[in-house]
Amino acid sequence: MTDGGDPIRELVQLLGRLPGVGEKSARRIAYHLLGGDAGYARALGESVATLADRVRRCSICGAYTSRARCVLCDDPRRSADVLCVVARPTDADAVERARVFQGRYHVLHALLDPLAGVGPQEFPLAPLLERIERDAVREVILATPPTVEGEATALYLAECLRARGLSVTRIASGVPHGGELEFTDPITLGRALEGRRAV
Image (cartoon, rainbow, N blue to C red):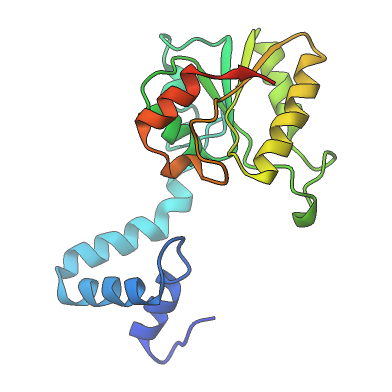
C-alpha cells in the first residue's frame, strides 16, 4: 500500500519492497534520484515500467530473455545432453559466472514447498521430463539451493530421473548450507560444480 499524497514516501515504500532494500536504503535511493540527473530518473522509470513487456521466459530453458530463445540455448557450442537444473534464473546466472559449465540450463521457477502449496502435484516436473526426452539428455546436474526446500526438490528429482535411467548428480557441498546460489562467489560455485556427486 502506498501513500498517494506524498511521492517521496510512496517511492520509499515501493523501493523497500525490493529484496535486500530496507527503509534506510530505500530512502537513500529516493533522495539520490531526486538530487541527480532527471533524465536518468526518467530512463530508470521507463525501463522498470516496460520491463514486463520487453522480457519473457526462454521457450527452451525458462530463463529470462528479450527473445524467444535465450543466447545460451541458441549457442551451438553448449552441450545439449548435459542439463543443469536450477530453481531460479538468478541461480543459472550464478553458475554461469563460475565459467566451468558448458552444458545447458533448465529453470524450474519453483521448489517443493508444501507449506507454500507446492507439492509433487503442483511441481513443474512435466516440462523437465519432456525436455530431457526431446534433447536426449544423458546427465542432469541438480543445482537447487542447499535449503530444506532445495534439498527436498533435489531428492524428488533424483528419484524421478533415476527411474528413467539418467545419470543424476548434485552440486557438491562447497556452497554453504542454507545459502543462496546467487550470492555464492564464482570460485566456490565452480568447485561445487566440479565436485558434484551422485544422489
